[in-house]
Amino acid sequence: MPSMDDEFRTMRDLSISKVHEHLAALRRMRNSLVSPLCRMPYEIIAKIVSFVPDPSDGDEHSSLLIAKSGPICNHVWSILKDTPKFWGHVDFNQRDSLTNLFRCRGRPSRLWIRYGPSETRNSWTTSTLYNWFAIAAPSVELLEEFRFYGTPSDFDIYRWIFANPLPLLHTLTVVSGRIQYSWVPEIIETWAISGQFPAGLRSVTLKQVLIPWETLLTSHLVDLDLDYSQTSEGLPIFMSTFVELLSLCSRLETLRLFCAGPETQDDNLAHTPGANPVHLTSLRVFEISDDALNIAYIMNHLKFPDATHIHIEPSIDFPEHLVSFTLPGLTRISPFEGLVRWSAGQESTLSLGNTKFTYHMDVDDEEFMETFMFTFDAPFVEFAGYSACALTALELDFDHEFEPRQIVWFTVLASLPALQRLSCSSTPFTSRYFAPKFFAELGKGSQGEIHCPKLKELDLSRFDIYDVDLVSVILLALYRRDKAGFPVQKFSSSKSFESSELDVFRRRAAAMESPKVLDREVLG
Image 1 (cartoon, rainbow, N blue to C red):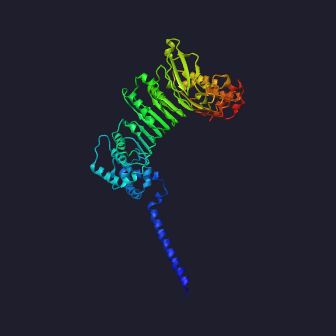
Image 2: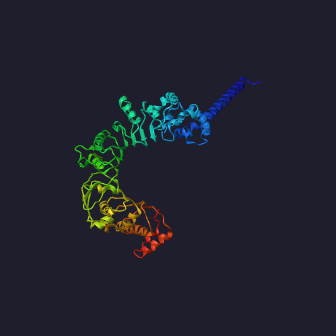
Image 3: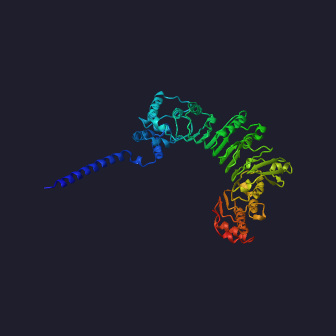
């Protein structure tokens, strides 16, 4: 007869067994519902849920795919709709838009929305969407990023989103295909009036839109990428106002400006130094693409002493008269050859890194003028500070085929004793007529025009290397620098060469200097 202890142990074992069975059943139920979702990143889930075929594509299989994907979306949506974390990872772009998620409720074919410029809104669909909004409202407030690309077919949706407080929003990106969208100004004006402007907004990117951008310039802003367009009459006022408002962005670290508008005609305004220039001491990256006079205005009224990367790209050439900037503390710059237009008999001044380079160029006669064969007077360098001496990285863009003004960079490079990395790009024309002399001078070391004693890296990955003769010149320059005690430790090129081509070079070079160092592999 079993003892009471044995019976107790038996009952306990049965109870434990029942508990295990119950837990196993719950686990199976949970796994059948959300197992893939429990272990999948939310940003991946967003793409899965939003990937439903577009019935307007005309694909004969679209209706079948929608019929199959509808129940799946309903199932997934029933799990995710009350998951706040999901809303922090939704990316609103042209393909994976929020509209696609609406089809998770009900019949996908009825809830598919694709507004075009001439289409009218369906009241039933709109009311259905706002019913859906009521469910999503608590989660939308957790939105961290808003990225919109393409046409504003779903403007009602975006207007509704921005009508909610978005305390966690830190990134706003609007890249559109038209000039102006009415809902964007309305959203920003709503923020300004209601006082619900996202206090944590740190990064703003606006492309091809006209909006009241001044409301976005706050002390919280760290990254601003602005694509603006204005008429020539309003452009000077716009630039002056813009520079003044930038004083509010005390924490700005990255500033990118692009303008495709017309050139302003107010030369005096552009070249008059500002009485009280705006100082952006936190700015590290500055990029601008605009017409020459707007760039001159910015550089004369905006100071960023601690910038480490500056990229300047004029949409048209600079005029012939004086254009001068001062960029103290610069360690990296990407100048474009369009920065200065060298015209016959004119003198141009350009300041880069607080060092002024002044050149004068003459044309022998009209025949040479027609063929763009220029002769240069002896250029000279006039130091105005220490910044050029501290320049460590330089990118040269030899992409202009008709004006061989690249010769001026000989003097520029001679003034950069701290230069460690040199990157060059070219066209076949400039590499054929300019590169041999350039690299020949680079290989002379202290005896040539281009010294650069600390040059350690030469990047020619964007440089057109057209034949083995240029390879000979480049490798011979590297060998001579090695021999002179100024070795280039890292070299990359845009072309890999067959061993037979290198053998041709070795035979040619051996007749001159017998460079044993060239037996090593130097071409990447």
